[in-house]
Image (cartoon, rainbow, N blue to C red; front, top):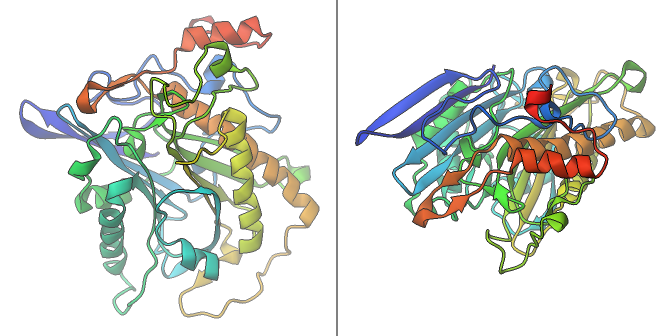
Length: 398
């Protein structure tokens, strides 16, 4: 199961919470975390698309993928954290996975992009954090990788660190994320259900006018379509006009994404995509590009100040590469071009649903300078959907 670590202030002393995540969060501070009373999209009857989800409906439905969070909440102004996605539990430098990165709007600081573009592989876990903590996170990731058995003679590692700016709810200039927080997220990463909402890197994020954060979802293809699984994790911190499964929420509620909006109109989105299909880098790049269609379904139009990136990788053992080994043709047949279409659809659907999960799991948060990130109101959302013919339900009606 995904494991979360939370750090905060309690009675003037630092307190640490460590918990096994089973779908609901542990409360660390009133209004600071996703907690009981918040629900995932499918709990409300919101089921985007036509493909079925995996057992966890999470990126961890792809076998071997692990997620870890560290959440930092201190005083009135620190609302930030770290999220880690590990493609497999082993030494990634010694057993690299094929990967690709797609850029929607490039106003961001994605460290490690050029080598992934050039070589088509990941050799470290993917770390997500806030904008001004990218280099601290990269340094911590290097320390971790260099210290792994088998890496004693390694002299070059490409750390992949992506960011969103949480400076509206978090005093980002404090740079509260430290190297030990990144290491804790790496060491606590687990498979199973993934904690969502205002956790890890998503702690201080805002999305589409509401409290945002981390969300995840998956799609499992029927055997006749390949039987592959695709999982998505989204760090949602972007602007736009909220749409939920086709229901124009932002328009109906008059929440336009202009400068006079009550929350910052810009922001970014990082989408991490995992699949067990034996895809090559050029095919993974095609998968990654489809993530932006999923964001668009939620109301994103990739504003000027948005850094929108998608990172896709395959976990299939046949397409991994041992360090120092020449790249050889995989021992499995390639996925035919036409067979990619269900995977493309799976990425779009899972990305869309992951954003809804981020919004629906996040609770209202008060942070830096007394700013308030309001949670998306569930009852009001369900009422709007019903008025437009959607079979949505309140949790008490299940």
